[in-house]
Amino acid sequence: MTRLNLAFLHSRIRVEEKLLIEALQTRQVTVKPIDIRDIVFDPQLAGNWKQFDLILDRCIAHGQALAVTAVLECMGCTCVNRLAVTRLCGNKLETSLALIAHGVPTLPIRLAVSPESALLAIEELGYPVVLKPVTGSWGRLLAKINDRDAAEAVLEHKSVLGSVQHHTFYVQPFVRKRNFDIRVFVIGGETICAVKRTSDHWITNTARGATTSNYPLSDALTELCNKASAAVGGGVLAIDVFETEGGELLVNEINSTMEFRNSIAVTGVNIPDRFIDYLFVAADHAHSVASSTEAIS
Amino acid sequence: MSTANCIECDASVVLGDDVVIGEIVSCVECGIDLEVTSVDPLAVELAPEVEEDWGE
Image (tube, rainbow over all chains, first blue to last red; front, side):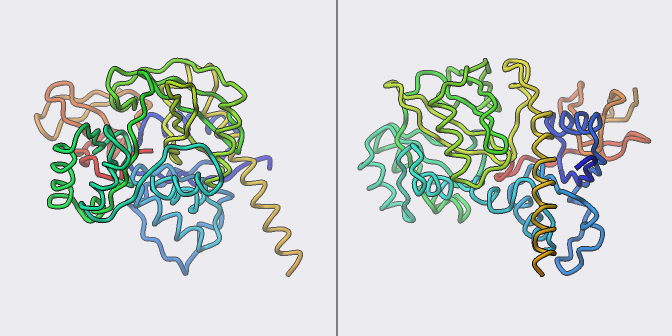
């Protein structure tokens, strides 16, 4: 494809969206930024949406991204990431299940739907554990639980004060990972670079103040992340990996609307450019599939 | 450079030419987050609070 006609869906604009839009303007791309908050979507009226070769979803709210990409895929549009990928990655439980189903090394989890069974799960895993909401990002509402008193308190608070999504209890053992985790960028099934996110806090999100430095890719890390990407359906992904004290690599979470502002300079990899390279590949693939379908029919 | 006034404290908010609609900026006087709703002329509103499903 020589020139890409791209719809750029967004709501709040982060640094990443600005970096992508700037990079898109230097490429053979006609880009139309669309604030989804201004749009009414009619699934039975594809209309102007079909003019785009590709729809790039950069919505900051997961629920909105799911709804909008569902409607657009129903119209026959090609979205990056695909709805199925966004749905899997936006839900920690479904991500864990996909990784387990595909034999990708990941943290053990327990799932419980009552505070009583959640307490049993926590005691079975052994303290400390981490209790997470199944949706959410930036390290919000994670609870590291060190003993039974804390477990009982947190479970009661979530049951009484939390919205219904907090009545599903997703529990992981706390992984002693020294003071860093690894954020790995995988685009189109290819692992392109990684950063080490270091923090004195047990939560190592950069949104919570962790600092980044380059983390050289090893064969083992590349293989792990390529497999993890395939397990959730590929696309443009940021994969969070823990390195245990024993040196084992475990996939923790996968992000489908990745943030990368702190990872370009330290890795020396132009992540926005690689991202855009993939958009051309995805659009070409979509055109090939469409052409084949037309030929068959 | 363009200028608007903070919704909260009325201080001048000066932004560069690369500002885009939907971008979040902080008022240097009161620190509140503002969302750019127009670039020509520059206009800002209070930014929405972070919600539970926001992020990556």
